[in-house]
Image 1: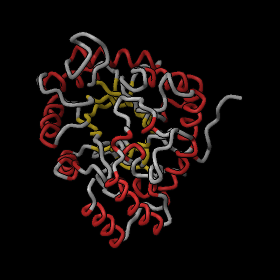
Image 2: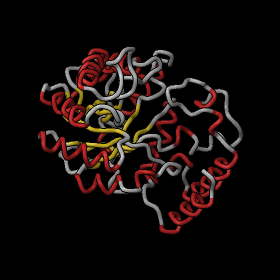
Image 3: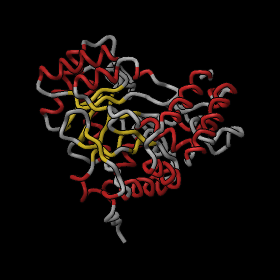
Image 4: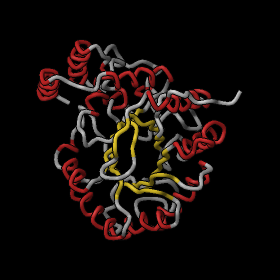
Length: 335
């Protein structure tokens, strides 16, 4: 029997406006950075994507280099989209990116028009799509003129290959400059995708203010620090964990799980228990607490992990005392 999504899916999710655009995003989106590559279990990936859509997650976030190997997450998603989701295309937001090395030679990296246009063409073929909803430049390019990179994003929208464009990991100053150029071209910057968690709060030092001023949405990745902000590593590194996998491509490494960090994690875990949440759920709720954050990307390896994460939606609010205890723990810890 073919997949039939839950009729209750839109009653299970909260949706937030993306900046000052007309687009609403689910509070939680599904990221396919890890666990959806050629080396991963296809049925598990399909089950996660189905369960996500059943829960009202309408946004699936990819990039050209997601895997491993690079490109294979888009291939996996394309197969699942064709078999399960193609008839719901108008209910789904698909995003992809380019900006990291994807192929050998001088044209497969960074931010030239040559690279960005070619990469999106390849991504569309891998996923079997006519267009993506959002196309990002994945990281700043210090060598290519910003006018060229933003001009490529504008061209891609005018070609009908993307509905919206965004940027990822740009500083506050770079974001302001990129937004100005795109606005002048008539293709506004819809969204910024930065890393953000209780252990990595750089966006609070100016970027969120710029996004609010420019009317740009914000979707954050790695809110759980790839599993560090959970109870998974409190008793050592499980052999089945991401940190033990050695998969590369930016994945958490065992050497990053230090004693100092685990002491902070233990204290945060106790605060979460007092809230009636797991640490993972509290970390996700915390990442949602700022109104300027449009959506939080979930990275999950198992369907039950997705279920656990979605329970965070039931308790997104924090008391002043809880926020102060979290701040004190982070301030006094060595992370």
